[in-house]
Length: 314
Image (tube, rainbow, N blue to C red; front, side, top):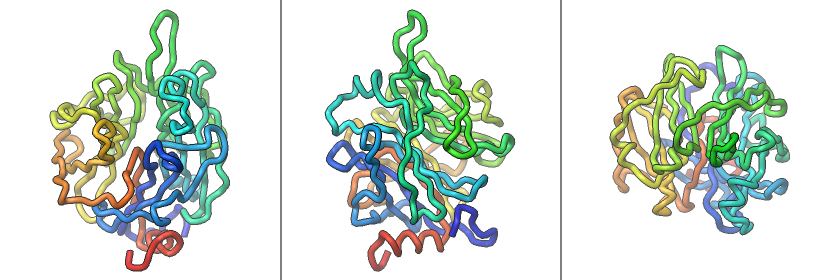
């Protein structure tokens, strides 16, 4: 099994990579799996699958991708451990400018974690790194939030971007999203020829959505979404397509209420319309799921993960 799945091997399951909170070992990498994308089972007995012992000695916001360039899986994550007691002010203004990276040929055998500094020298932090493969450019676009200042402007969270082919060498950071308000937690999904970009407005505490026919920073335009406009106290948006139908699931972390992730469903990403699922329609498993990412799995990939970290009957 490698990141390059067999052409005739369909996706049949899902992996949720996440952290669980600010308790001991909560800010590490956890795996959960699902057959239908809505009912989840924790792997490794609800304990971390990967742990960072470098940098801040904890990670948040883990994001996994399968790279078409080298047929490997990568996890990139925020180098941050709030449980250490430093507090949010320090985390934003005097935090790590690095990300933590793992790589694997099969999602089972992982490299030792490594730290890569990608933030600007004046950045106060590098939060929630994510990436999408730019098919036209043949490289990965990586983006994250950094607290920065310019001239007399007060410090503000801005989304920066860089490019890489191997998650070791990165281009110089550039501004990707700057607004009047603070913005963090950006994620991008491609459907057909359109990119949909979801971010957290850190001032209003809502999720915004934009669309574009390219990944160019200036090409995105706001997409109205009344449901998201009325959903407060959420962050960490993540989107994935269901394997068996033309529906998408947008997951948002209900951090303000301490409830973990909430699924919203749409049949058309371009509509901006979502239906919030009722509690009886989903089950996120025993552990609280905090900001993470989702990966569609083949049946063989699912079975390999369950064989190593699962329990009988999954």
